[in-house]
Amino acid sequence: MTFPRHSIAVLILLALVAPCAAQGPKGDRANPHNARFNAQAYGRGTDAFRRLLFELHFEAVPSFADLLELPPEQSLFIMLGNPICLRPRNFPDGLRKFVEQGGAVLIATDQKPDAEAEALLSELAGVTVTGQTLVFRQPSGAGGPMPCYNGSDCCPILEPIEGLTTASGSMSVLGTLSSLLGAGGRPDLFRRDPQPGSSRLQVATNAPSRLIATEKDVTWWVKSGIHCLARLPSRCENESGEEVDPSTPQIRGSFTRLTQGLAFNDRMLFAVGGTVGKGRVLVLADHSIFINRMMLPREIHNMEFAANCLHWLRGGVSTPMEAAKAALKKDPDALQQLIGQRKYVLFWDDGKVHRDFNVPLKKVSLPPKLPPEPAIVAAIDKTIAKLEDENYFNEELLAGLDDLAGGRQRLLVSVVYLLTLAAFLFLVYRFLWRARHRLETAAPLLADAVGQHEPRATLLDQRRRALLRLGNVWEMGHCLARECFESAGVALTGASPPRVTMTQGSWRQRWRIRRRVARLWRLARGTTPVPLSPAALHHQVRELEELKTALANGTIRLT
Image (cartoon, rainbow, N blue to C red; front, side, top):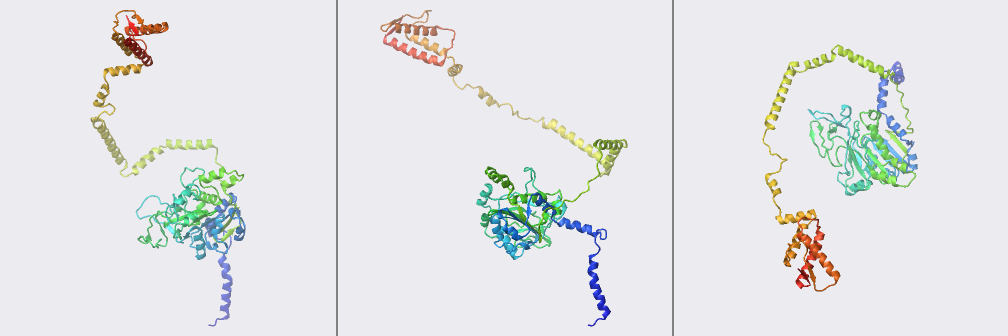
């Protein structure tokens, strides 16, 4: 085809002017949409996350080559967004080798990695990102609050996974024991500091994806120490309407309804992490939880969650056992061991490496200064007094009653019904319920009361026990002494003791026998009880037996 010369000139002019027209004038005053565009760009940025790195005294690493030259035990690699940096050229010995030597890695992305990146990620943590965008679907007709931030179905709240589970959901005995002893390396990223006893952190996502396990054998977890950390709500679905897991489809309508799984192959798995060798690993299925739009609001706790992640990746203690080990070490760098020793960070932010974390804080215009407190209180009192003079509160109350269904008349009838019902229930309780026949539970039964008063032994036995309990057995000694003299044929009528005649023995023995007979005579003749202990009675019985033996032998005679 042939064109006229002026047509060719017009085409050339349009080709030169079109780019200039597309740029437009600079400045918000010339283009009012620039302010909104800048706000959206700032919301997608990571200024708050970088400022957090600066406040935690991390130092930026400019390139992967510089990262590999640093000691691994002092290095941290953070990747947010596009996983194109996961290449063998950036990690010649492998990403897992870097972690095993002491490095730490935080990978957060909702994009599906390519073959090379997926191989590195699978070798490191045994999981990969599906790349599916999940949203929360409220069932039709279901009420109640949604587990989402700001009521948006694209921002579901994470659910912490409590317990010790492996990448395929099984309970590993070795992993459980190691975690209980503080060697498992399972981080608690949802704790609230400085109040450990308060509620868990509310961490919101933004159009997240999910993780799936790539390892078929569960024994790999024992070697790598990777744990389940968080999951998405069970009612999340794929945004495109496709099945989240075609192997177990549950289609209802145009979306797949997902049920909550208890295993690590849970279809709503979001975060895994743990220790690999000497290093630490965190893998999240969404990098948007660290953007400004999700970290700056105070209604959610993404900022605290990010601080917990960085503290743990730095090498700080996460269990009481680790804290005890660090405290017991006699090392001048014990404080550094408590907070961690990794300070060099390579921050890959969606295709860009940040070389400086010192993000300047924005200047905020302060509100005008309020008047002094007495003036504010006086103004409030004046306003309340004016409203009371105008009878404002009563009129508003009556107006509110009129707005109810049926108005004041309906309310009055309802109050009368309620009072009548309350009076009826009181009368039923007073004259029917309380007046019913009931057994007195505090009083003992008759059989038990009678049984308590029955004698448990004979009268003589009871008397003997009473004397032993009192510690005075004079009555028993009195009876035994009388029996002894009566068996010897001595009448107990005289006031003085009988006369003792001995056929043999010294004067001292005669003197002792006379004293013993006189003491036993007083005991046998006595009418007033005197204290006599059981031990003294035992000694007296022995003397009586000796006296009876002497009388029977004829050694002693009583006249």
